[in-house]
Image (cartoon, rainbow, N blue to C red; front, side, top):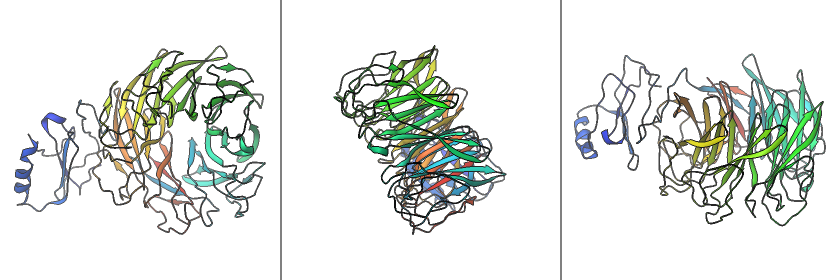
Amino acid sequence: MLTRSEKRYIFTSLGEGRSKLKPDSELTILNRRFLPLLLCLYSFFLISNCEYRPRDNQNLLLLLGTGTSSSSYSQGGIDDPSGNPVSGPVEGGWTNDAYIKPSNVGLGGGYFGYNLAISGDTMVIGAYRESSNQTTITNGPTASTDTSSMDSGAAYVFRNVSGSWIQEAYLKASNANSNDRFGISVSISGNTIVVGASLDGGSGSAYVFQRTGTTWVQEAILKASNFDSGDLFGSDVAINQDVIVVGAQSEDSNQNTITNGTTASTNNSKSDSGAAYVFRRAAGVWTQEAYLKAPNSDNGDFFGSSVSIAGNTIAIGAYQESSQSASINGTTASADNSKFAAGAVYVYQRSAGIWVQEAFLKASNLDSSDRFGSSVAIVGNTLTVGAPLEDSNMGAVINGTTASSDNSNGSAGAAYVFERVGSVWSQSAYLKAPNVQGGDQFGTSVAIDGETIVVGAINEGSNQTTVTNGILNNWNDKAPQSGAAYLFQRSSGAWGMNAYLKAPNPDVADLFGISVAISGNRIVVGASQECGNQATVTYGSNASSDNSAYRAGAAYAFQK
């Protein structure tokens, strides 16, 4: 937002997209050759906060602070080269709400915030390397400080009560053991939480918890019907009401069809091909309903590394799928392997009690090692997919079916939006960070609710400590791998950037953005390697600058 004390002027090249923000006066640079002249002219004035950052054949953006202004601007945007909005309208704006830490932060090492989820006034946060030997649930604000069961893992439930986030429960597996990694994945729907423990028993498990009032109890332990050592069942989990989907990214069968029912293949000839399992609750009892495999299942695809569910639709990522095919609708998928780890996403639909494949999705600019499908999020007829190792230097949103084929910014990352009309899926937007930098891994995490998408970039490196609503103008790299999250809003059918979120205490290698979640006007972002030793929740922009609890982790809540 442009405030009364921060009036800024925006200059863009006529041929490369025009600013939509209209301050009291606006200068337009006709050609980059005029830049030296412009700077000379302004040398006669006192200029503060001047930053020049050409965007590699994209918009020339010059922001000049010129003292005070009597106007306040809260809406606006910048076009991409195709005339599509990069910055969407800002209504109300996002602000820091809370800095959330586990009550047993201790010496750190728990990786609190590695995964998280939110539903209404309740969030669940995983800490897969928490090490207590407790095997019961603690309902209330405390947690065990024991450290004798290394990497057993835990999950923490926080509830918003009259504007305050209160730790409501500390969840542990009833059979907790060292190295189970309980909390590697979490999901919540209403009063039900599911937590993955990908190394429990060597094969992995998922645990279901149910709330009555403010009391949580363990309701079920889910296992694959064909469980086997090293399958990593629980790699990712997702829940929607009475249906849970669990990914097992290292399951090894060579099956390439769906099995509706309680059985699954015990063949192990396709190492790390991956699988996903659907469970349904009826009268309080959970039963395996389907066993999902990719139609082009192959060694090392890691199908099931990311999962999401909305209603009767499931999306499953396979970030090392290696075909060079474009997006395909229907039940087929390419068996080609010429684009290693390009990645793919598979969409499944339930009809008349039967799960069938609806689509096989690929990035429109797919390339080797992009890892498309590393993260997925679906709501209604809209699907968002992250590709954190995508390499283009594009710093804008492209609405439509195309994407940049440039590869000059290694592992900058991208996210893709797909829309379904009837049963046909097509790419509707290609999302990039406006401050795109190689190695940022934009797309590590994605979340969607309604018309808002959140994308995490764990290696983004600015030291900014505030939220930017609207146009982003901070390009520094003074806190490498501190991380960031970006909000995109859909307005009149077009996606544009809406806000840029940073932790109020960014530090090197915090990995803010490793997980993101959104529910209505609340967003929560995880930073699993944040090192503060604080064991309480603080509000607003207050956050610990202490670094004595190595990789304890943190979560940050934002509200609108």
